[in-house]
Image 1: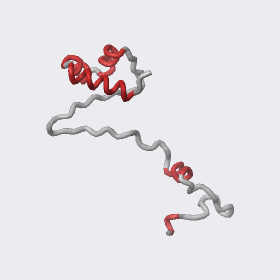
Image 2: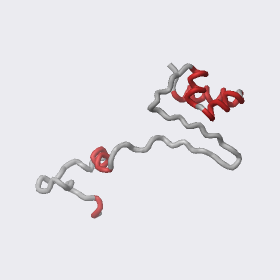
Image 3: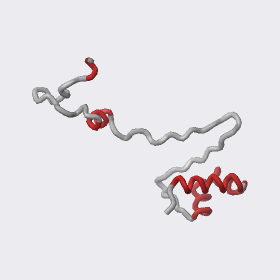
Image 4: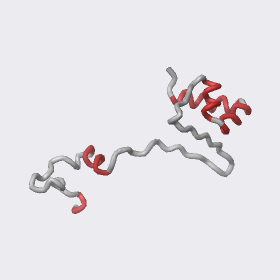
Length: 97
């Protein structure tokens, strides 16, 4: 089973060598990938292909956190040891440090 990184490398390699595939990939990424790799991309997944130039560079960032600030605080230990007299606040409040 290929990883997503392996598939991306294969797609970029093919687009570098084959101008027709590159053009199809830019205009219809899902169709070009399906035709080249035989991989059906679900309708719920969007694929955007960008082409770097001499004046434009694209950076790919990993997905942002899907946790709320409250969830992050709990995961980081901020929700531990709640004061039983006031359940709305943790036993300490780092904003007062």
